[in-house]
Image 1 (cartoon, one colour):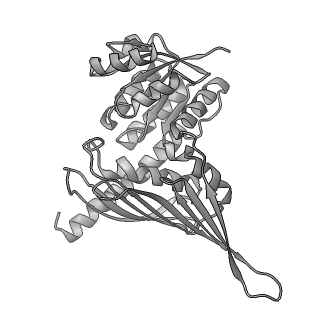
Image 2 (cartoon, rainbow, N blue to C red):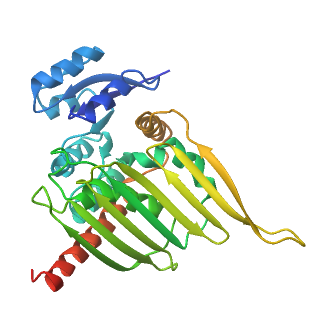
Image 3 (cartoon, rainbow, N blue to C red):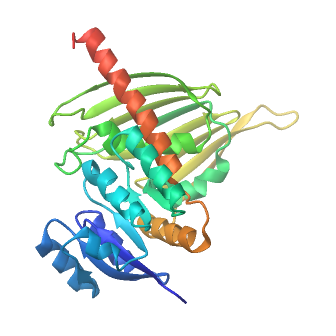
Length: 317
């Protein structure tokens, strides 16, 4: 079996796990890593028998695929350099900071016939994989994604940091185009928005009400979906799910039937990287393509625009 030569750019909180998995997956060989902190890069490389590269260009000469796990503000520049070097790229979410940057990356991937996958890992959460067959055409979706404060990720606001996970999930249910966005949000502990709520209405009539916070005491990652004759609840943190269905039998009053689900122990990032490597080997479309990442980013910016407009109307700008 020919293994794809892999490299990781940025081996901090998330990148270290990309390196660990590339070193163990049967379809990949971890060749090397690079990071602004060379001591950190050396420690990770030594742990997995890989090489440290002082510069990005030297790493790109030695690999077929790369994971881009630098801070969000650097996603565009690093991913662009990788695609221009004709490498297959998995970039952590969000794909970029600005929608125009995302569209440029998508165009580069097409031009060079390279796979561009975006790290929306909740798509690979085992409970999401188990529950997806039970999701048809939701009429109303409610999402809560709450976490405690951490300096990590505060180079962008909570919409691009956390809410974008749920935006991507909602879009994966094919609700149609966005018709209206109402949103509010405020900075609390950082200089950007730390807690936000958005009401997004789609052309299908579906409405998504999403809340994201990185200043909460308790963690929560839940999605509830209401559709004709059924209600689906997904807890990404506990990996538990439930489907509640209306059951009607001749001669009897309608009743509610509950079916509970438990997701497996598989690591979402592992499933994500396996999917990426498979897309590279087959030339197929990634499960979370560059186009998907760009679409989520576009909606996220509509939410940010609505937050700004709300603040100008009610707080006086």
